[in-house]
Image (tube, rainbow, N blue to C red; front, side):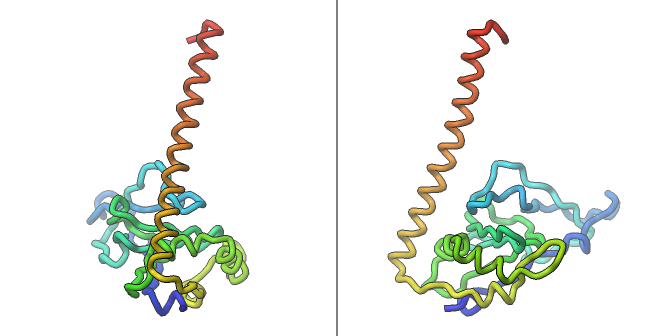
Amino acid sequence: MLLGEIARIRTGLVLSRKKAEVDLEVKAEYPLISLKNIQEDGTFTDDPIEIFKSKEVIDDEFFTREGDVLVRLSYPNTAVFIGKEQEGLLIPSYFANIEIHDASVMPGYVAWYLNTEKVKADLLKFQTGTNIPSTNKKILEQLSIPELDRHKQEMITRLQQLYRKEKSLYRRLMQEKEKLYKAVAYSIAGMK
């Protein structure tokens, strides 16, 4: 099945068209998802969300909704599943928003599949542009998504969630170990 057959794909907002240049122009402020908020493995970072000052009220179609999948349009074309915590973020034009409308396909499965090495290599082949090569909506629509039964999709989605949780816990453990190491070393050296 093609991604364009099971989902609606839209590119994000070109921010320069709506950006308020001075405070007097500001009509609304929105939380903005940026490249620094997403890691290459498809997880969210702990970096703070930027605030975008707009000179106009922006349509709802440019904001994340739970269950959507965002794809970075430039290499490494990272896909990220939008959970409840990431709802309502303004989507800039360097992302495509994928809204799955086929009930037999789980968005978490699609996000996982889009992050596989095979898909990333395929997308790299079709990059366009010279300065900043990127993928476009038409290329995404033509991606073939393997059909799996719902049970297998759920298994992949749960496994991916577990992997991400373990990875996050491991990162936090490493940060705590670093603090412990420094505290012990400084204590032994008589430093504060």
